[in-house]
Image 1 (cartoon, rainbow over the protein chains, first blue to last red):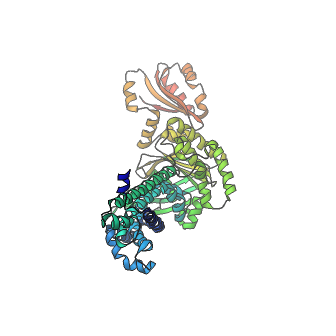
Image 2 (image 1 turned 90 degrees about the vertical axis):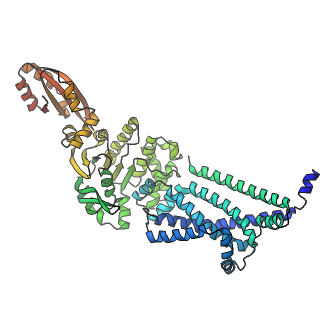
Image 3 (image 1 turned 180 degrees about the vertical axis):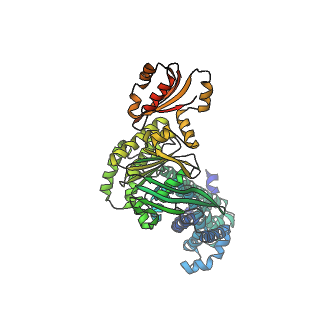
Amino acid sequence: MDVLLSFFANIDWSEIWLATGDTMTMLFGSLFFTVVLGLPLGVLLFLTSPRQLFEQKSLYAFLSLIVNILRSLPFIILLIVMIPFTVLLTGTSLGVAGAIPPLVVGATPFFARLVETALREVDRGIIEATQSMGATTRQIITNALLPEARPGIFAAITVTAITLVSYTAMAGVVGAGGLGDLAIRFGYQRFQTDVMVVTVVMLLILVQILQTVGDKLVVHFSRK
Amino acid sequence: MIEFHNVHKTYRVAGKDIPALHPTSLRVERGQVFGLIGHSGAGKSTLLRLINRLEEPSGGQITVDGEEVTALDANGLRRFRQQVGMIFQHFNLLASKTVADNVALPLTLAGELSRKEIDLRVAELLARVGLSDHARKYPAQLSGGQKQRVGIARALATKPKILLCDEATSALDPQTTASVLKLLAEINRELNLTIVLITHEMDVIRRVCDQVAVMDAGVIVEQGSVAEVFLHPQHPTTKRFVQEAEQVDEGEQRDVFAHVPGRIVRLTFQGEATYAPLLGTVARETGVDYSILAGRIDHIKDTPYGQLTLAVTGGDMEAAFARFTAADVHMEVLR
């Protein structure tokens, strides 16, 4: 017991909880904006892609290029490149507020692609059936495509949330706060292995919870 | 009434024009069950989808009850489509919605009824197709036949004038097929609904259709009343379909009957003639003997018909043949 206690000698639990709170704020804040921006972008990618309802070769090529550029940029570089823009948007490049814009820009193209793929999984016959009822394109999207793709979209949100967890840890590098920040400043730079272990375990628990909740939603909406 | 005037459809695939439907003129009367039969790739699916413009024609004119469908703008087309129900081979139900919500969908999209009115109409439709107990289930919990019944209820939701059936029974087993066809025949009678169905099974045509058109390579090669086309097929494609349905191979039959003595004739009769005691009478009066080599007594939709292959020996054969020809019977001398 004493050995165990002495191993965790450096742990300041209030710090840990504070950092966990910061991580959660960054995660859900950026997840919210990622879904709000990425869902329409994913729908647009799907609709403009070849042989779909709104086939638009040049628009699709353009959107696709932007998405690919943002996705090929390493997140750590994106964090630094984004600093002036982040300051413009939130007034600071530090803390939770400073971390959310680069997180959203990093995750949105990724999420949009997943949404596009989920929509592609919807049987073409469903679209045809809805068309035959006299639906408008907007009605096809809201009444058929999105409800049918719901399990896929929830899976996409889950994967994106977990990706965002690792991104928030990386955002610690540019002073974002949160568990990643704690791990780098104390665990790595001050050789406090116990802090490192605790932060990693906290991140692990977070990822586990996200995955479990996500899987449950996917199963629930699969209606099988 | 659905009318096609020189309607054609060409697909452009990899820079080449592929004709799917050659210029076709066609007329489907109101309240009729019109069957289109053809092998896959014959153009029947394209023809069906031209009616509600899920496929845009490359040329020609389509009118429904005098309204020119090919001239409708986007809004007009949406309103027109609400008067045309459609059911599909793979049902195309929304897996994310309950049975009741699937049936309600066309009404929700049309946006003309209140929630309460929609609920009433849905209950009425589910009762009509015998699925009242399944309203809260999801499609994945239903059997194929039940799914198609949901499809039919959904297609009828907006009280359409026309029902398009795209291989509606091809994914079902024979027993379920029979019950779905029976339902289609019932709603055709009750609602005076015009039904256009496509299929690759002659049996489907025989059970429910009034008129049939046979398609091959984007052309209607034969068309007429089902009894006429079924009993006296002219085009090779039609003959093949009939043979498949009857499970009779003429060439094979000829070999099997090679050693049978006498003349061989085939008699085809339909309607009341099916029940007339013609064979016995003619045999007694002309002194011929006959033996039945092959035969089938059945019905096409509600009309009985029979087709018998006979070997005739002895007696006054010419007189017997003359009697057959004079009666309300079609006679073919095979040998």
